[in-house]
Image 1 (cartoon, rainbow, N blue to C red):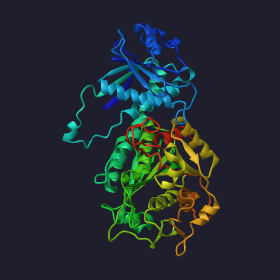
Image 2 (cartoon, helix red, strand yellow):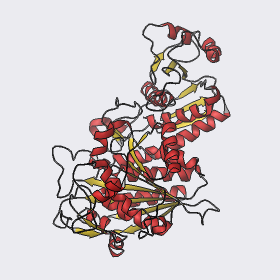
Image 3 (cartoon, rainbow, N blue to C red):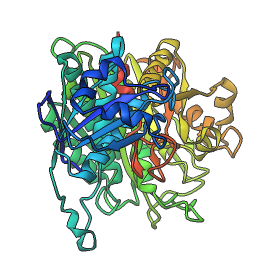
Image 4 (cartoon, rainbow, N blue to C red):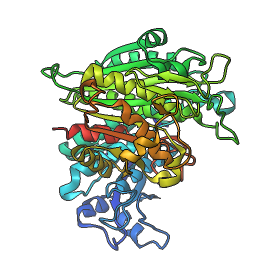
Length: 508
């Protein structure tokens, strides 16, 4: 796959030309007639072919007699009909598939003609996202049986457009996609490499590259500070747990209350003594996807130089089985003094998040908090692989996130969080239990976390800070490249990066 995609001015002799048409197109759209003339009528001819389809996100290949060696026609489906929750997703998916088609053909340059009308800038951004997401491949560990991952043909794809405005928007989309791919690469990295210590080193590297500030609380210090959740979960890991803080503080915002992003990064989850069974341990390297989404979002925030102060906190630990592992019936104390009775060692993500949330609220006094975690199998049962579950206590924050979800195709669905759910988490010998059976399973995670989110860290008053918990267990990875969206190859999706960036761009 391409190592780089760049956007440039239109070139006179591209290797290929790409256009987009809707399902109802019977003849060449007016905006493409000049292009069609240069191609010897290839666009009009393709629309008349019986095998041609303009299904949303499809890419068809034709071979003009003049003008370029290939014509790619992206299908938009029915105009105005959402795909995967967004009317822009047909462009995104088509662009991702265009990247793959061009790579297989050894294409080095494409002239892309976008007929977006008043939506041209949004479409160009979506196309940039799709091109970038489609270029993702994790082949760093390929060996001799795979040809050592050597790429034949061009390693850069040059995508040219005519308009300066669409070029700028496409470049922005590419930048955000590259940040999502940072999250995907780290999510895909196997647990024998990507342990908590590795994530610390990667976070420091990203901070140096982007200008972020990186601070780390190591396992020893976390224990001394009373972070009982992070300590317990990670005490049997191959390397000690760690809490990573990344800070983006543009000039003039140092005194502003930040938006705080918090992510669960369990680098591998055996379930602990509540051992996962029946093959459910496969792909538990993806239990760090919430934390990697925060890392990817911070990467994008810094590269885009967004004018809002943002703090990202990543709680990293490895949940293993060992003589030093924590047990069912243990009672631990979180950073804010809440005692937690362990009823299930496989409900570990909420324990590391408890310390991250309570420490973050007390230290940074955020104006709003969003946490992301592959927290429960229950949310997958409830919502499938089509959206993330969202628990949110503030209508403005809800609107910001849901609007961002609709724009990016990273959809959310609101689930309830009532006082009854909080009471359900009450413990017998500790303040609360980390699991309370199967009833309201995905809601339990949010109810548990609510005990660790408070305005200015004043947990005694139980004062609300705008807070959203996103359970991304069903959308953090796809099992096959043909899964519902068509936007991703098999593996991690980077869900949350584009959504968070979009919301932060609109932040007031």
